[in-house]
Amino acid sequence: MRDPDAGILASELRHVVGCLQRLIGAPLHDAWMSSTGQVVLAVGHDLVLIEHDPVPRLHTIAGRPRNPANAFSFQGLLRARVEGPLSALRTVNDDRVVELVFGAHTLHARLFGKGGGIWLLEGDRVIGSAGGPAPEALPPLPAGSPRATPPRFAPMEGDWDRAARDFLGPIAARVALDGARRRVRVHLGTLLARERRLVANLSGDLARADRSDELRASADALAATLHTIPRGARAVDVPDLSDPERTLHIELDPSKPASATMGRLYDKAGRLDRASGGILERLDAAERKVAALDEARGSLDTADQDALAIILARWPLPQPKPKQDAPAAPFRTWTGPHGQVVFVGRNDKGNHALVFRHSRGRDWWLHVRDRPGAHVVLPMANSGSAPSLEQLLVAAQIALAASGAKPGEAYDVVYARVADLRPIKSAPGKVLVRDERVLHVRRESLQGWTIT
Image (cartoon, rainbow, N blue to C red; front, side):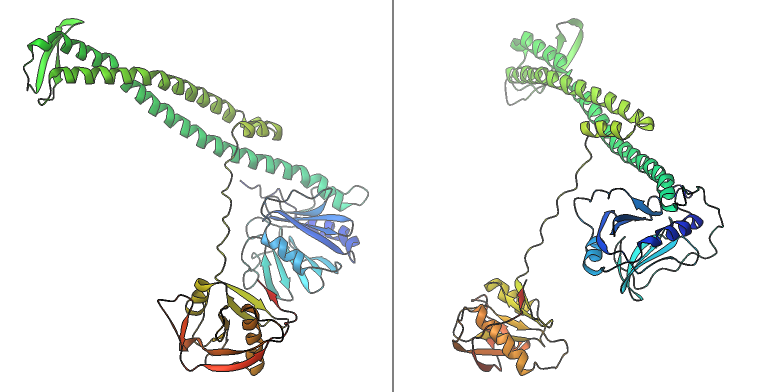
């Protein structure tokens, strides 16, 4: 459980923000995230930690935390959008809310538990959230005034930033250790439950394997009385050789002689004997593992990070499955220097998918006449609108490039609305065109276009 008094107080935050005014005018060099609850900014020569979970706080740190294996998208957003010097660092509403302003962008952080978070603003618009998709607007602040609690620590030589780091750092370390203990406890509990189920299953297997003596006794009794058992009998009652006063009832297969049942009983007894040895070994190993897991779980209350590392070295946490790469789109996207977009099929299947699955009837299709090549689609934003001649000529140039035409060569380029196309089932990638139109175009170079 989060300690509500573990994080920074409003009175403490005001002092720290006042101390960090020395960073105003310093450039932003980089940004990192080790979790969705914290951001570290390299401002000038300092590393500024902004954390709302698990311990809400703001102060500088000596070294940045380690990045996770998969970087958070909010980190990429900060690196791509935020630049320039820090122009303002302020608290908001006299609460545990702080804003760092870099040019047109503001990093807005609410340093409290429930309702806390970190958002990136561009002007008044929210463009990113450290905790997930960006909301349309910042959530409202909690109602009521913050508690007027005096600072719990005093600065050394007036340095409130260092005092906050010295006071909140150990709290954060303790909270992190408690969280690690909880995660390991859950992990060991899962392993322990699994091993206990294995012990129960193996104990049942061993009990069934112990029936080998009973099966062998029945086989011995049959062997002693085979000459008295008539063929076709369905069952027989024979005396137990180890206890003549006890009678054994044995089911027989009437289509076979009693000796067949005897042999089957001997075979099954032998298999159970052989299996029991392996079951005993596995049962012993499982019981020892249960005892070791119990001991490790019992030591968690006092375990430090080193002790946890030793436990996890023996019983590692399950690793998340690697993300599978998404299949490539059936078409490529050509993007022009002014944001124009044209789609180009990758192959026959891609041509079909582009035209008949990913395009709309109002879009325009182009293809070089009498030459193999990709289908090209010029998307239209509005229904009923027609592309300009300039748009058509650029798309025709892309169609020529996709067909392998060399600079200076001229060809007819057919174009039509996608709504006027029909697929040819026997020829994937080919279409029937109704109301086609033609441009005669000479291949020229395309400047400033990128392909993805």
